[in-house]
Length: 359
Ligand SMILES: *Cc1c(COP(=O)(O)O)cnc(C)c1O
Image (cartoon, rainbow, N blue to C red; front, side, top):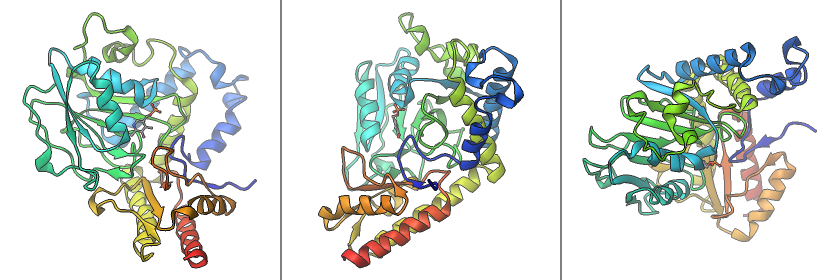
C-alpha cells in the first residue's frame, strides 16, 4: 500500500521519517533488547528522552525560563477544566472569546467553576474585532482558541487583555506551526495528536509565577504545580507519545524550525484557498480572509449533494479523510506540519479536475 496523503484533523499525519524511525526501533530500542514502551519511565533512557524533549520544545518555540513546560495527559478536554482550576485563584470571573466549537466547549466547562464572560463572535466575522474584546481588570484570565479546528478559523493577531489579566490560548491544532509571543501568553496548551505526535500527550506551557493558585480541594493530578515540581514525572507519563514527540521535534529542527513550518503552512493553505476562490462558486469558503486557518481549510460544494462523491473519489486518488467534522458537515483539509507541499498540490489538482467533471 503506497502512503496516502492524510488530511485528517486529528489524530493527524506525522512525518514519514519519524514513523520509520519508530518502526525500526520499536521492538528493540537501539539494541536494548526491549521496547521503549516496556522500560521504566524512571530509567536513564526515558529520563534522557523526556528531558531532551523539554529542551527541544524550549528551543523550537523560544520558551523563556519564566515558563514551565509540562507533559500531561487528558487531551484538550482536560485542559478545559484544569485552566480554571489552576488560574482562578480568588477571582470570580474569567473571559472567553467564543468563536467556534472548541472555545465554546472550554467556556461551558469553565462555567462549572466561575462566572464566564463570554465574548461571542458573530459567526460571519470568524474572529472578533480587537475593539470587541472587553475584559474586566479583575477577570482571572482571558481565554481564546488560536485555531478552531472544526470551523477553520485562526487568529492572525493576539487578543489584548489588561496587563494584569493573563492570556491563555488553546493551540492544539496549530502547535509548532508558528511562533508564540511569550511576553503576551501566560499559558498555552496543545493536545499532541493534531500537529505534533500521537494521542495521549498534552503539552502545557505556563508561567511559573501562576503555579500554586489551586484550592485545597483540587485533585492532585489536576494541579499544574504538582507536575511542574515533579518534572512531569509525578506519575507514569505517556512514554511512547513523548518518544514520538521527541523525534517530531528533531524533524522540525532538521527541516528549519518553526518559522519554516509557518512558511510552509501558508504555501499549502494558499494552494487550497486559491482553488476555492477561483472556482466561480463551485467551492465555497465564506470565512473572512483574515480569519482563515492555515491548518484546517473548510469548504463546501455549491452542489452539496456532491460532497460524499467528492470525498469518495478523493480517497480513491489517495487523498484521505477530507470530510468535515460530523457537527458541521462539508469538507475539511487539515494541512499540518507533516503534510508535504506535494500533498496540497495533489488536492488542488484533484479539486480542479473534480470541478471540470461535475461543474
Ligand atoms: C481536538 C481539539 C481539542 C480537544 O482535544 P482532545 O485532545 O480530543 O481532548 C481542543 N481544542 C482544539 C483546538 C482541538 O483541535
